[in-house]
Length: 283
Image (tube, rainbow, N blue to C red; front, side):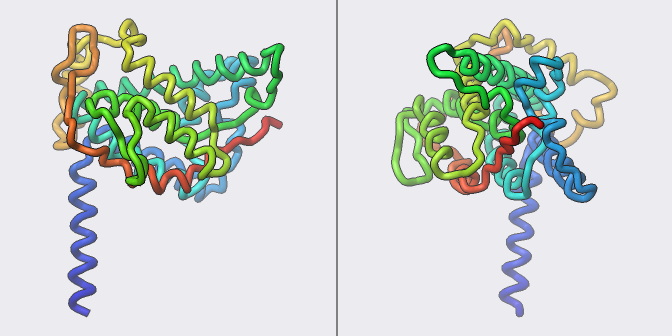
């Protein structure tokens, strides 16, 4: 019995250390997504058509709230579990570089721009006179994976690496990494929202190429948020990271680590088998 007790204690200790090292916003988003799924499970809520990202509903009824509700809801335990397992190392890395408030703003921006790209592409394809595809505007998508794809693009850009390993099997040029993952997920997982992931990649590249610079506040904005008395309890928490670095236009500070592989690689490996993007037709 003693070896088992020691092993269990070791696993518990490692999990506690891993979670305690997770910054404030990253852990907060993880808890919120997990809590929302748990509440939905307990009360039997499965009316995802009411909260998913549905291009036709957004366009016809201006239901902008879907930009954000669709990101926080998940369709299954594996969906939320592996989305969060992929998100935590990504969010941790970016939050340590950018600061907690800046990361929160980044995720809000990405959720917004992902939805806009999703809308544009869906309706362009729907009204394409050469090849009419109407189902995309009625595709109902939920999950955090679109934002995760954006963050993969951004983190890869910041890392400065020239190549990235795909599941530890082969290396690809870093600039193609997200695209390779996009293609592989379409073959390895079922019910995957191709357009949701594609929109995430487009937002990530738009951000890294500076196309969103005019939307980014300067460091003084983040500092003023951190200085609010109502947030003092949050700011004093050990996992809260103050905003430092960057330019006066709020761009990301440079971060280069040429020899370090992405720590989320194996989480992505498991994630590809658990993505359960809900593609329900609007009734």
